[in-house]
Image (cartoon, rainbow, N blue to C red; front, side, top):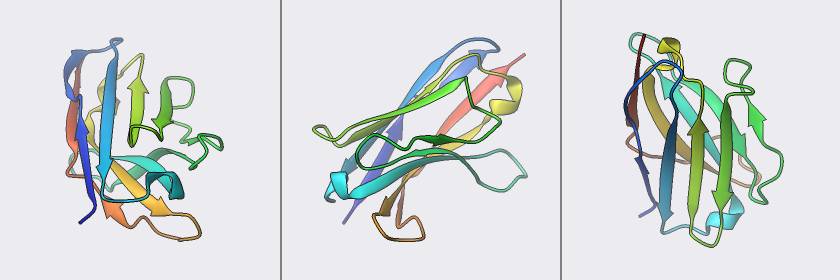
Length: 119
């Protein structure tokens, strides 16, 4: 069974940084687009950004553009989300997800990691 396991969340102050990691197993990692999503309390889950199988075609939501960076290492089956200049409104549970090339939806999800940013 496919597994996605996020790590690296925590409590930080505004302006600080975090690096989230997502370890993928039991899938042909290089054939999946990987996405990061977040869900704040009482709000819908929204996409943060995604990275294509090749590492190219990185897309970010407007709210994080210029502050967050997505990268992947296909040799290690890992995807990362670097969060810089964090703001209290970035507080959320962050999820990684995998979407098979050619699929219109994300097929697999991790359990999430909490990021809390204090002001």
